[in-house]
Length: 367
Length: 265
Image (cartoon, rainbow over all chains, first blue to last red; front, side, top):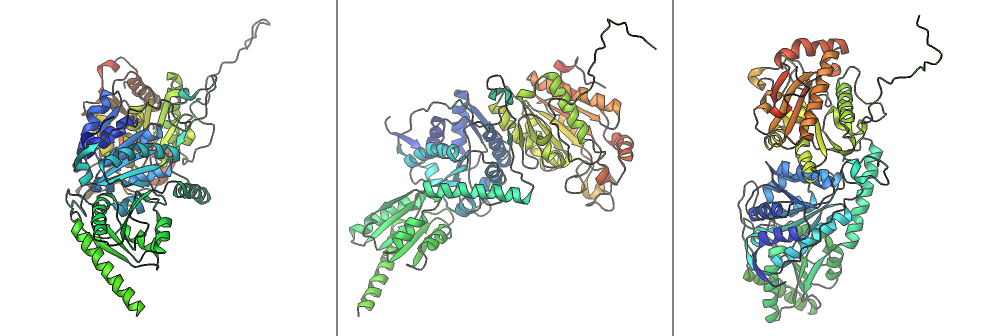
């Protein structure tokens, strides 16, 4: 398939359709709305389910219902809507049904604004609802990567019976660039054995099967403890298998810029420019924000002189980087809020400062 | 004394048994609580309509939170008030299932009123069994949107005051005003005659869904002796004497296609 000029939100919606999404429930919110609009057209065309819910609260609970029935289901929203959906995320995690969420982040707190932001890092990665759980969180930095990860999101959700988030900022949602859509995938007609289908659908050799129950309640302390142990074991398995990141100029880098999403893309350009000026800098771009690539970062910290975290927030991933790096190297921060993007020259200036400081330091150490 | 002829076989006729749609377990409901009656009526109806194998329950948060332990078919446990949204998700992807929610007054009339109204307004092919006992049961007897004026609860210790907390909400009447609703009635579980009428209404509500007519809701006036601080007998009398005047029994909407069905008073 050839590349086409695609708008981020539309490309993501179409990628979800082609990944075999059978049901979509959502609510309009800028800068995500084109995703919902595309679904409203495409899903009924294909005989699949589209429903505009009365609120994000209802949308996520519709997702919970359809997920309990074992179909590929998703919703999408933006930061204030994600806050409202947190109730449902927790129930989805608590009953271990697979579902996919796209968060096209905007500036906050409150109504904030509708410009690109990464300020949902904590509310998605750290605490997507009450209780001990983490969704898998994928953070693409281009439209093509968003398309590819949309397909991956459904696969990971089903594989681990978990919630998968794809987080991007309003810039990726709203911009256009050439990208290639995946081929239309065969629909998965078979429902999983645990799904709510009505017992007759699961009859085997005429025998009525046991009823299926989807619930997140475990009233006994030991019972809930055991469930949480099981959930944590699954999260550990995901951590072992699914960490993803991208590196460039990392082999001999003395300064490592860490950034995800659009900030990662901008940082990539800055790093390239700095390399032309012979500054030994590299880029580390986490693709999974959870599980976070902490082991790799800890390893890189053994020889890097300094880290610079660049985010479109007040420093949220920063704390994960600091935890991974520990006392091995200083971790500096450059943040932009208010829906503003970091510019390449801001990043370059910051890296130059850090580099000069480390060179001066090295000179002192020599003397 | 009637003597049986030697060739006349004495046959046993089964006239009463546990519905297949109910599990053979004890419930956790308090003595005198009418949840047990409501469960049994639903199970009998589902047996009679022969839909057990394609029925999916969405249980609420409230005293009926464990309803899925008592019904013998696929079930989900929703977040508080969200049963109609969860049921919407289930039904939309399983259009040939029979999906119903079972919700109390805190769940449906308070925290979940938006989900209930919008599911009804969309004419979702769902059935809602709404238990109105004028109080929050599970949390220990707080004021509900359906509590009567003057009713003393643990969160209205001097009695419900209209000035501060408004009037009791009449859900069956309100639902009847929505075009997507094809069946909205109120029944009571306070005595045998009314229990039989309630069963007929529940049956009509499920038939409405089976025929794909739209959203159906049966409001059941129910007792909560524990949180009302009454004996079971006094509690059903309170339903009769105090609740029914505020919540008149009747058919608030019956779509034409259901007019010849049972379920009329």
